[in-house]
Figure 1 (tube, helix red, strand yellow):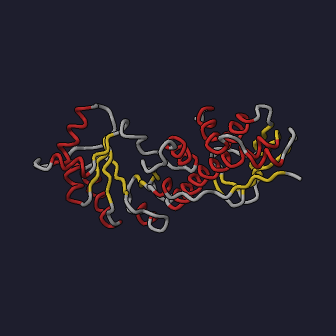
Figure 2 (cartoon, one colour):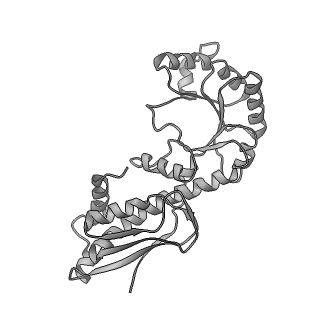
Length: 280
């Protein structure tokens, strides 16, 4: 998933003309050993990036990974041991920590949301609210945390929203009309359509989309939408979205929806606390 060019670009952003502190203080090719230590409980993601980042600066570096992605570890866990050129280790430190902390933070946050709904059939989904250039990595972190990926971009699934529906304002059922146009444009491609209330939900259901996204609707209305879907024996999935957080997600899941999309698991993720400590 990570390319050498990506890593070189990230390292160059930090090092540029040279690491002047290390160059001034470490005047030989001394080797050293360091350990990545988990400072709080969390789900790790991006472990293999440690090896790739350090080997770009020191191809002879020895890296031993003691952990794996997608697993919840306790505080104090030794994540990896790195042995190699002292200067190269210091130059790779921040880039490797930034990536590992960020991706593990997303995985850990996702894991917490997944745990909140595990007694229901609802699945946690991410959104397109990702860091430019990091979408593939951040969505990978969501999977490591037990979540599911929504569409990857504008190209792989239809997501018909209010601004699209304004084009169909003169149609008697603008939701059904938009769904039919999407289906004709690209057959066998998942169609998701957003609604804001139960009246719109009933209209959208007539178009038989794959998913109806129920935006900012309270749990009671979500339950009514699920019941209406079931009464019609429709195969359409119900997805709750909009302003959902860790405190409210359980009630949303218990409404019977199939999917819950949470932008916060990527755009508001808290970095996991990880340290790199050089041995004496």
